[in-house]
Length: 283
Ligand code: LIP
Image (cartoon, rainbow, N blue to C red; front, side, top):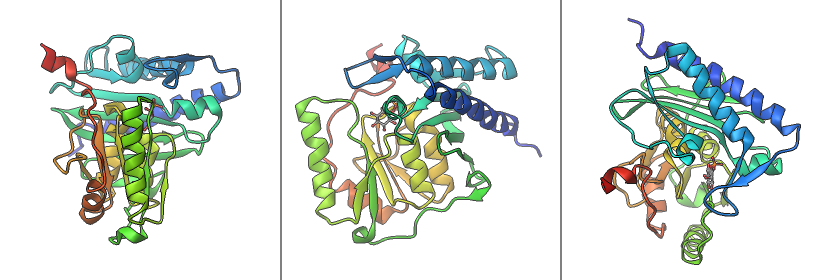
C-alpha cells in the first residue's frame, strides 16, 4: 500500500533542491546582512526569500490550508511556533546563515514533516556541497543514493565530537559552553568540530563522520530534519540531561550509540534556554 506521505516526501526533496539553487545564486551577489536577537545572530533577505519560496511551493502543491508551517523566518516575524497534531512542515531555509554571509562552505536547507507531533521525514540539502540527505521514518537514511550508517565507535577516546557555540554571547553562557568543550577535549576525544549548521552536523553523525553532535540553544527548525536522518541511520537522540529527546526544548544530544551519548552527557554544563513553544506555557 502506498505510504500516505510518500508524495510529500518526494516533493520536499524537489523543494529543497530548488531552495538550494536560490542560495547558490545569492552567493554570487552582494548579501545584505541584518540582525535578529543580537549583533551576531544574522539574517539576510535570502533567508526570508527562500523560506517564502519553500512555503509557496508547498502550498501550491498541497493546498494553502492543508498543513501547518513552522519556519525560522516566519517565527522571527511573529508567527507562532506551536507544534500541534496537525501535519506540519518545519523549515529552516538557510541553516548556517553566518556561513552563508562569510562564504564558509556549509549551508543547508532543512525541511521536516511532523504528524501528530511525530517526525515522519526529514530532508537536509547541503547546497554548497550539493549533498541531498534525506530519511523517511522506518525506511532508512540516505545521502543522494548512498545509504547512511552511523559510526560503530564505542570508545570515547577514539571519537570525534561536533558542537557549536551558537549566537548567545552572554558571559555566563559562553563560559558554560566553553567549559563543556574543555571537559570533552580533556576526556580526551580525538577532536571537537563544528560546521556552523546544526542540520549539517546531524548529517555528519548519520554518515559516521563524527560520533556525536550536541548543542544547547538550537531551534526545532535547525534539528527536526536531522533528527529523522540520524535515527534512520541507526543513531539516537536524547535531551542534554539524559532524558527523552524533546524537539521544542532547544537542546539535544545526537549520537551513534548510547555509550557515546551518556559519556558526552556527563560533561555537558547545562544552562537554561526558553523553549521554542514557550508561548504555550504562558497562556
Ligand atoms: C544555526 C544553527 C547552529 C547554531 C547557530 C545558528 P541558523 O542556525 O544551525 O547550530 O549554532 O547559532 O542558530 O541561524 O544559521 O539557521
